[in-house]
Image (cartoon, rainbow, N blue to C red):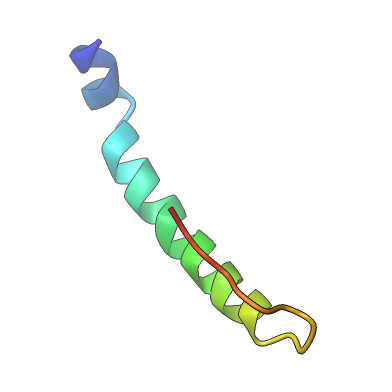
Length: 40
């Protein structure tokens, strides 16, 4: 429920983890054998 989202800071955690994932995917894209990287 919405109280759980607030108490567990779900939205904030997703935002923080998305930044980490974006950096990882950017680094991954630099590899010569990787053709395309997408983040949903």
